[in-house]
Length: 446
Ligand code: SAM
Ligand code: SF4
Image 1 (tube, rainbow, N blue to C red):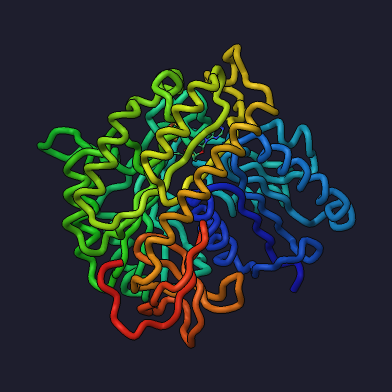
Image 2: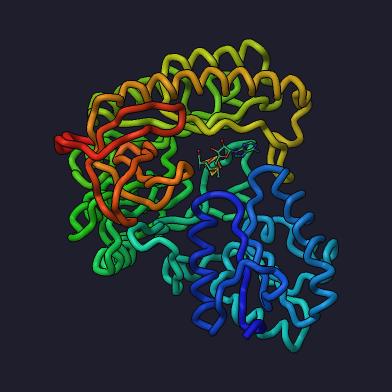
């Protein structure tokens, strides 16, 4: 029946992917069935991202496209959820009065009630500022059977001057360790072999939890060790740590936990000490590189990815050259590169010396070219090795696609299903993926 179908579009990071599994879970528990056709949907949900400006433009563009459908079918309900909902609030229904529900980042558990109320009372909005129920605790509809996202903390206590996350996700709130473990155990019992622990700053996990008779301290290392003991689980990943709090106990826990994968996402943002200071990132370039050395020394073969912003206000050519130099020294396996985007409410957005678009673009292109050549070099080092690959499904090349423990994407041929572990001989390299074939010898480490 067309009146019971929902269309869900997700923008942004893994946090949003995870929230979307919960949105799908809530709607399914209320009897809705997923569709890809807006015309036959009775509920359309946009789960939005606010990290860069183009996200705003995309949302309002998408809402514009829905307007004629809503006019043709006034019973269609349109929902805007996520970070832009939290950021823009009432502005969304001002700009697009055909939106029925605006639900902020903390208010997801009340989605069904808001939808029901919209039926009789008209447009609804909930922008509550406090997370009472973690998204992971809501019913989920997961598209992938072998992998799951697990939220360990929401929000962030840092104040990086470019970043809107603390404004739309609030201060850090950690989930009790027992709840996280219970969820991971349940997932493993249901066939999940890989989990990714999610938080804006995972290594400060637990700092805000009150544990009777003990000092307040981050508990991420304890959490990693505890999750490592969950039976049935084969791989543990996490994202993202902040370089500043990446303490030796976390490195020890990673090195001593066989299920924790040999990959770390270690966001740099800039290679210039002057820019890092204005960004309010609390580490400096030499410290960052020293941490990287310590991690690589403790965990053999670990792959490292990073985030870098180009064109932060006041970034000079010299600052940018510092970033290029550091990128050359760090030898990242992958880098997510972003052009700086001023976000309302952040300190950097009001700084005087915003960099012209064409300068940002030119620097960005140079950074991408350098990183592509480094990524290719790192991938070539894998040729001739054998890796354990977890099959994800059909890849772009028409064959199978999977991932190594080091988070490298591998394309290969074979007769396997998602969730299978296969030893694959690496025979070819590209900047963002490897080519493989079924191995004759078993994989050694990764
Ligand atoms: N918590 C993580 C950390 O501290 O590195 C990052 C979370 S954020 C969702 C992901 C990435 O988006 C950041 O690492 C940063 O590189 C990028 N980003 C955040 N704000 C940005 C902005 N205003 N313009 C461009 N990129 C931005
Ligand atoms: Fe944003 Fe900084 Fe918090 Fe990361 S650590 S979410 S970049 S404020």
